Image (cartoon, rainbow, N blue to C red; front, side):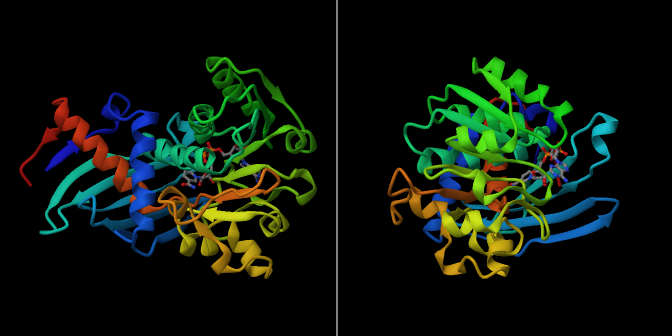
Length: 320
Ligand code: NAD
């Protein structure tokens, strides 16, 4: 059995290899070669969440589970709020294959998902990127998004403005001008908006969103969380990683409950990747990607990490 510790991941998997692994994963899901098992997610109290996301990709010969959760007190201890580990198994024998640190991989696979949505759904002439949220994931999101379009500016809003320097520094690294703005200005200027917060109420309202905008709503991954008004989903073409998660724990849960969106109208992003759905069809269309985070994404990047770690001789092997 191979062990790839958290400390090795940054030297192995970068934004580009995560992007490729997740695009292949979404395509496998669309071809029905891969499927996610039901998610287990439990509230542990004091805002802590713990759960298991798992699945099987027959095409990639990957079976496994990510065990992990969200611990809001961790930032004060100097460690990320998300803590997770991925376990991979041989799909033929069930024998354990690898244990892989999942923290950085979670950020990379989540950023890859919204970047893939931008690649396939945002207008080709998108110039302004709007960021709502400035926590741990936000800088990864910004870096991955910046690779997909010729952005000329980043505008950002966060409930806690003292966190915005994280994004200002990341934008500076990328050579992009950065401006902290209010929500009406963000909606009026941005061609692409990423939301990545732990909000339980709609932050962006219907009147904030212009025709032609692409939204990647990435923060809502639990029942009750919400980042945008359900009326925005009613106006948009809604895409997701997995419909079952979108309607139960994703941003679409609220629009579905309000009767504003039908389950059958939500499109898996994989369908656009494999060409069975056209994606955006006009410059005025609002597209919204409800990125809920599926187990297969975790397995895909973990399998890539093991492959690279073995090739570079940094995977540790133990008899198990
Ligand atoms: P973090 O704790 O580092 O940052 C939290 C962010 O949410 C900050 O910008 C904070 O200001 C904002 N926020 C907190 N409470 C808020 C409120 N009530 N209203 C509006 N904004 C609020 O967290 P993070 O690691 O950056 O993760 C952000 C979110 O993304 C979490 O909800 C997490 O569960 C989710 N997430 C989703 C996926 C996925 O695959 N979809 C993957 C990883 C994380």
